[in-house]
Amino acid sequence: MEAVRLRNVRFSYEEEKAVRDVNLKLEKGDFAAFIGPNGSGKSTVIKMLMGALEPDEGRVEVLEKDVTRLRDWTDIGYISQEVREFNQSFPATVREIVGSNLYNEMGFFRFLNDRLEEKIHRALKLVDMENFRGRRIGNLSGGQQQRVFIARMMVNDPELILLDEPLSGVDIKTQDEFYRIIGDINSELNKTVIMVSHDVNVISSHANYVVCFENGRAHLHRSDEFNYDSYLDEIRDSSLQIVPDHDH
Ligand SMILES: Nc1ncnc2c1ncn2[C@@H]1O[C@H](COP(=O)(O)OP(=O)(O)OP(=O)(O)O)[C@@H](O)[C@H]1O
Image (cartoon, rainbow, N blue to C red; front, top):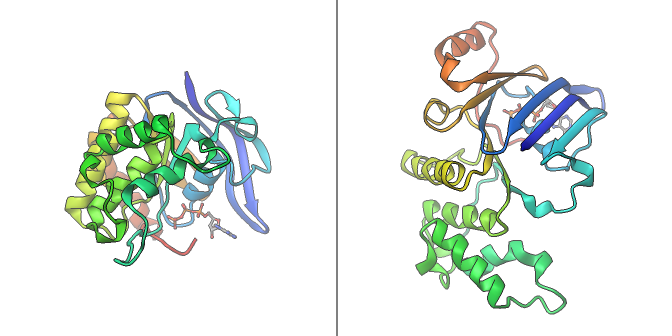
């Protein structure tokens, strides 16, 4: 099954041409790393895949449907580049944070019935956090909070997982843990993953495709045929920059 298909997609922010004629096809179970310099169009494509932006031209399909007609938004899971450090006094519990993604299913009284509680339990188990369900999110370590956010994303059992630089400002140990969990979700649950990442370890150990963005265009490479060092040399020569960016 096709998980993602972009056909001749273009998008401009007013004057700024952010995406120029992008074509892309990923099958269910693929893991694609989006790489490219700042401003090359990665986040804009992610936003179109979420249905948050509509293309000016072309088509964006998710799970073989035009994304604007996708009925079930729970098929798409997303973690953004916002840094999620909760201060200690933030009152929500782990259970409430994960449950907040079940809002659509809660019905009129916003009540978590046994079936929804079971979903929360399963999602927390997936990230090995079931013993923390009653804890306040603000009292957990950065790495534990991050696992809770993976659980929140997984509670609806999404088919397509979009990760837009979720690791900026996080230490190496926490990053490795995150990659391991996402890698398992991809390989064991056969979920399709798209991750904006400049980490060569992700590319070599988890991604089967690398999508290189440059000035609003995208090129797909198989990760085992992709030479990251010569890619970096090219970028360096052209004086384009690759740094995590929080401005937009
Ligand atoms: N909200 C916006 N309004 C106007 N222009 C924007 C907006 N968001 C992005 N752009 C512009 O569109 C282009 C593509 O931006 P995009 O955020 O998709 O790049 P990116 O590859 O994700 O970059 P980064 O690595 O810095 O996050 C850039 O030139 C950017 O300045």
